[in-house]
Image (cartoon, rainbow, N blue to C red; front, side, top):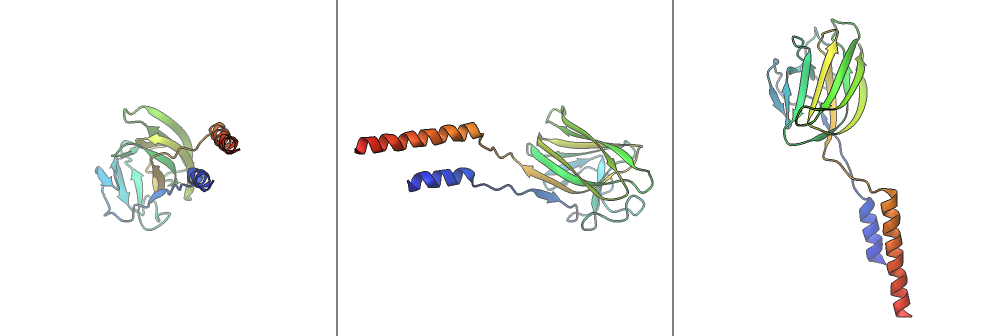
Length: 184
């Protein structure tokens, strides 16, 4: 019986710890492709510019898209990731900006898309996207959008469905009854 209890306990034990990119542990970049914690930032930059945004959400630096082509993208170099969310902030030189955010697969097909508004305050936006290779964003009107505390997980955790658990329970109960019947 102890073995069965241990088996059931192990099925429900597991933890998922999100990773947060704060962009504070890298030298500032000036709109060149940059590799950072397994990601490649293209058409963007990491740093802090008072004319764009005077403060980061946490720490002293943040990630921005390149204003010239109004695009930024962050690609994971080792497969896929699950994007939980991030803090967004508008460019100080522009009014509230509409930001189109995309989650792409390894062939640049759009898996997910979401439109948000970046304001003068840091606002966390939740995404809960799984199996993404590239995170891409654009803004309208054309402006730099600051992003900080980019939160993600590597790999997915499968959660058993209730029907599967019920079948497992019935199977274990059947084994228990047959064992009792054979002893009697």
